[in-house]
Length: 306
Ligand code: MN
Image (cartoon, rainbow, N blue to C red; front, side, top):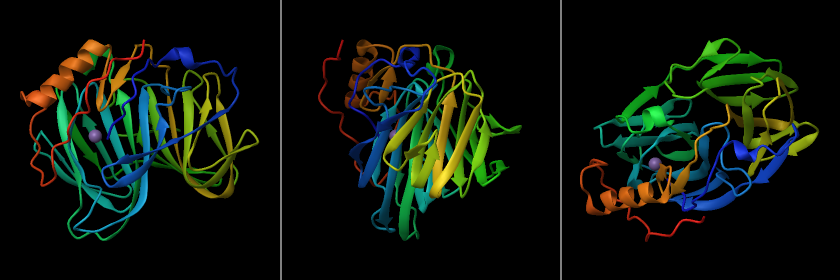
């Protein structure tokens, strides 16, 4: 999964004066799937360390035709994969082969380099839908080793009119077992009626509605939109226009410059060029994935925007 945009992200985005801003997602294609990309967008490059968000599907999959994202590299991020329907098979260059089902979390740390593929989960025939998110790793960990974790049991917090599953970070005293390197939160919300959530005011937040529609600060937020709340909010009041499922992402504004190209996240164009060359030459940096799918071809190099 990747982006062909290059840009800077970070605290410079905070122009909202505490107000909700609604930013449309961009439709794209990843493997066999249509995705709606909520991050990065030209007006909003990140939410905390969250620097990429693709809402995948819903699409019909079978044992013969799955998500089908062939082996491709990453560096400098953690991928957070969460399904709301269906199943897929994650394979990576660490040797992991993990079926991911709806309601479970895959967390892959790229560090200096890793590669992975997303395949059909044998025997699963039905609808696939979910979200893949990237967390930028800070300077202290981004050159470190790769890692893969699967978490099938995550804390769930009751809300007045729904519930919140804690994928990453902590919420209402409940901590996710997923290990991340910066102060962030990632929740899946199911909302049937008016609900109030306590927020960390040092975090900026983004709301991505996966299905249904929510009302937030008197505005409707629907699938295909990112609702952005700048730092300083300590409460979020949501209501369901129709029963909804949404992701709430938050974090302390990420203070480091990010350069992004294709599947690579670094700090400048040179790092991205070095990574591209390693993938094209298959020099071992990104390892090898045992997959029946074709290894992804890197797009031609592109001069970064300045
Ligand atoms: Mn990927």
